Image (cartoon, rainbow, N blue to C red; front, side):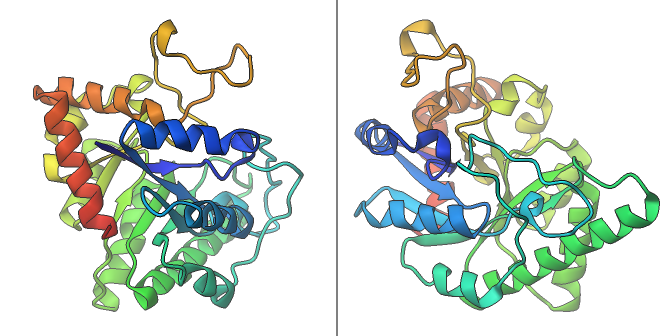
Length: 288
């Protein structure tokens, strides 16, 4: 068994065949957490999870790139949503009501993202502070509902570490969660691990050299994920499943096994051991 702890079957890329993807995923003994990035996709993740008695779960949250700041032009990703969307203000009560659903196992993905940012120093400062403020509000939501957190962090690891340390120290708050798609350095990984977080690895490990970080990360702190439809791992031609008849093959939860295989190789243990360990890690963090 494997658990894809970060998928987006709630995205537009799967609008025509999500049921078929889920069917073959479950048939291959893989469970999935579908991750929300704004209210629309969070609601869709919950709706999908409700159709399945076992194996499909949801996380809800406002991704930093969808936060209304008025300082950057939002990028429209056709793989995520069908129509051009507006930036969103975080509505605590609205998200809280959605998170009360029994299939919601985490708040996420939330965090910091400095990839698209204002060019002037003053605007950049305001931009970063707005992201940090909304992040802290969503951390309060996780505390309120006693849920773990799925963190998104791009080009902002040091700031995320600082925010989390201050939040935990000032409020004597224990935050459980995972740093999804970890791409930082070992020093940053150590900081997150020392705070009690898990590190999530996906197809990015085939694109960036994260071998040393994986080697040093304790087995009981590793989660497997795909981030599908993104970050497709390299797979053999006979395993390709291309429902869109396109040259660009879409990632899906079934391919989390390739991530597990590479982690097993780096750790010098069997695939079966990695599957068992990471599955137990996910069940422990997300309480299912």
